[in-house]
Length: 293
Image (cartoon, rainbow, N blue to C red; front, side, top):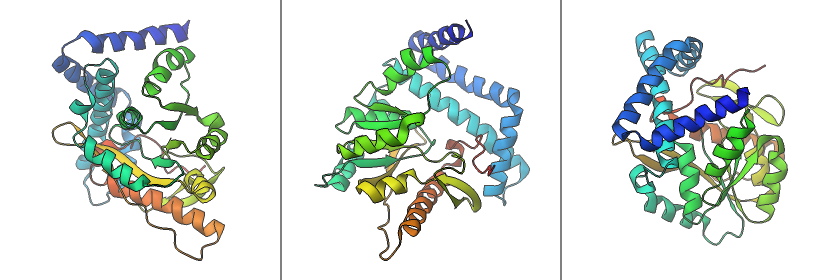
């Protein structure tokens, strides 16, 4: 019964976003974010603690304001995604540099016979990013977490994520499916910016603090040599998303396997930090990223 109630609430939210005036929808979700930041005070504290360690020069009032902006940014991402889900926003409404980004990816891919390993973070709008490339000739097998609600997952989430030819890989079977995809020369997408636990992970640094980071990207790259593309959808001042593509440095010569895995894994974090610092409110600070137990 609980599962059905949650499903119909989610469906109602989608229908609301389909018919209500856009200006009202944006205002509604922004107010909802402010309410959530009051109701979920523990999450605000997590965000503020994380931000304090990352930005020790900021005052407590600045850190609190940034934590609240983090809630508002997440709400804006959800709103944009809901409106896109309902066809009320198109790619051109949402993405400011789509053609340039596609051309950059084409050049990076070149004549490499292997697939692309896209990796991004819970930053800006990762859902739009995957849909955009799937719709424009770069379908991606994307790793995601299965919803606790099977009805929501099967009827709402999975069809949306697979709408443009993308393939959804669940974490409980991720490595096998990723290997299968890369063996077939397909593109894959991973979001390795959250806490994975010690298994299949390395101790790295992120914003100057130690944390576990999955070594999945390093393992896949060393085995299959796909094209590595760090890519992000960062919201700009006009509320459209700029697709940001970073260069991944070449692997230094002479490294053994363990050294190479650590180099790649740490570079992923370094790139994440570089991008997050350009718009810190757009990253998922409410997550306990640095928890080591």
